[in-house]
Length: 336
Image 1 (cartoon, rainbow, N blue to C red):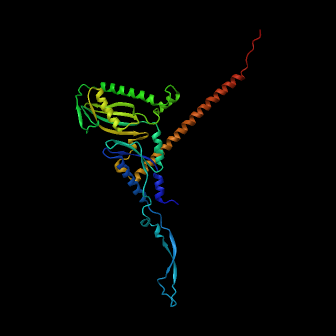
Image 2 (image 1 turned 90 degrees about the vertical axis):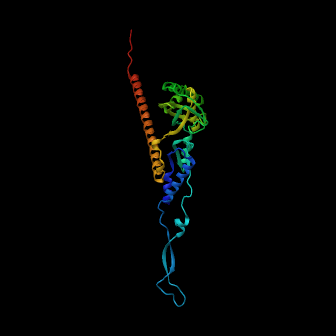
Image 3 (image 1 turned 30 degrees about the horizontal axis):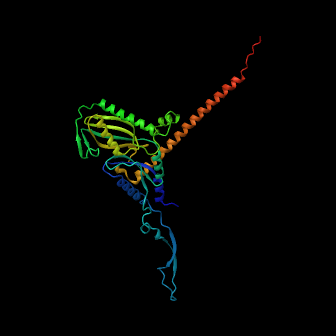
């Protein structure tokens, strides 16, 4: 029979996501989550101790003159199974980290517990994009492309307009779309490529250079601007370099003030747990929510397949009836 701690651990196995604050290393975040989970699992009520029968001297009766003792059967707890003797039931939990964020970045970070790490490995193989918002500032260039780095150049930005900005973004997006088709192993003229593009799964197989599948400006207030980016195989350093290159294309300079991930696969900011909710109870609720969402997707996909199958069967039946009607219709023979 499994203990309550083991049952709770199995309920925790799965995927969930947290919101990583800027300035916090992902290893520190993972260790904090692991500590909270260990505390929550080991704090579950321990099962009642088993008892065993022992024969103990009867304190109410005096021993006989012959030296014999009066013994009585007594049920006593087995203290060797007590938590104070055995220690915590779980000493370590395996918490895996998905697509990582560097210390300066913030946003959605996917984590896995126990057997959820197998699902996390499958997540790496799915060709789904990740969404970011990039905060930029015109007028300066730094050695590491961040606004806190060592300034290497300053420039003017009064000539930059939103139309010029949109033109540069369209040029970059077109170049990346060409790279996407080049690194993809699917024939662009095939039906498979069309279906993958509709589902948003068209992308390179395995590792490739970082590719921006979408790029648009959602705020333009010089010298400040905000970009929304969809990308594959990216790093946060590469995204900061993109902001720098946009400044150069506009005959100016730009530095990145912030990188924030808003979506990783099917996990969004709305699903992410903030620091105040990194407890075992909140993580358990997030894992259960992920499982229910996954089951709903499977059921909806099954219903869609059944509907398509039923439609095709009805179409086939109608075509067969029409064919049978044509065969039963007598042909008129004209006699001369």
